[in-house]
Amino acid sequence: MGSIYFTGNGIPAEVNPGNFYLPSGVVAVDPVQGLHWAGLAAEHGSRKAQMSLAYAYQMGWDGLPKDEALSQKYLAQAVDNPVHTIEELRDAMFQIIDIHKVYPKESVAAHQTGVVRVTFMAPDRKVTAYTIDKSSGYPALDQAVKQALAECVFPPRAPSLAGVQRFTVAVNFELPPAQSAPGAATTAGPAH
Image (cartoon, rainbow, N blue to C red; front, side, top):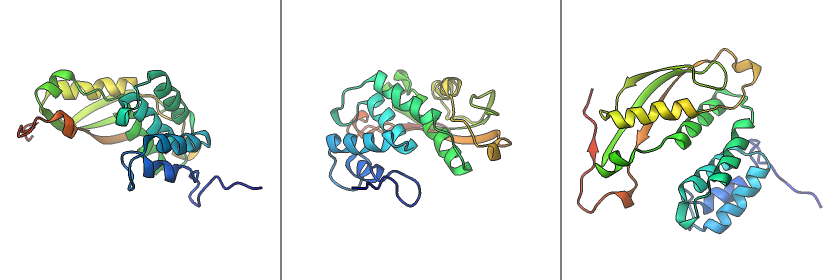
């Protein structure tokens, strides 16, 4: 009996049911089913599933116990999986930066939110230089982006992407609804 593992776009078929069951999906959330399907997709090399699982275990989604070892396992799989298109590279970089981003406790306590726009050089798999193009207005949030970039290791690139070395991303710091007190306003950084 044959099995169909991949959809037409090269993504394992299991990733789609996994997305439906995980918190960002379109049907009722069932973390057990989401983890099952996303795990199957991750085993078949889906970077999207690997990154989702890395983030889920890092953050402890929907009562899932935080598990740094499993988070790092799935992150390592995603990082070792080569990228072949500029879209794949962009998506992988954004996800990897996001998973390394740590929201400073003092910023959470002060309800500080904002977006840091940063341009960086990554001629290979690591950031070699960066410039904050637009500050969030909060030094702690800007510093968190610098720290995240220092920790990132990006996937290897296909030879056709060797010349792509400069990237600009917007890193968002937004409090989840559970972190916001009822009636409390969040503080956005000053406009620059």
